[in-house]
Length: 102
Image (cartoon, rainbow, N blue to C red; front, side, top):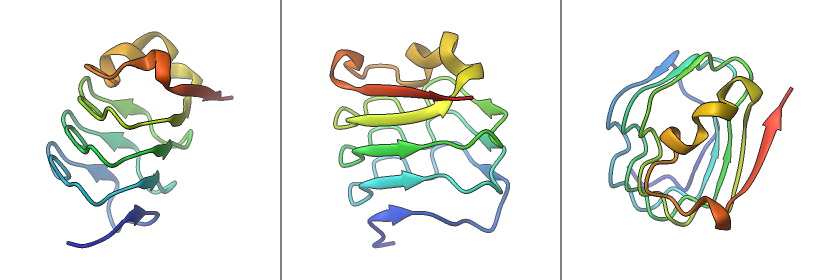
């Protein structure tokens, strides 16, 4: 796999560890077809800078973006506001611009 951005997938679930340690992904625009992001799905993806998660996503497991230390901006559904620290485990969120979808 040699993609730098993710904007479409032919599935409704991003499974555990599927992009773990993938170093070429810079931008994630999770498509509306996705309703679940499993644990460690993007963990240790050190090149991800921007993430956009639509309201269609109803479940994001803990550690989905663990150690993604280069995330600068994430747009996430409001329902995950209380869990954002668990979703972005081991990420310095003081350096992340977090916005919430309504």
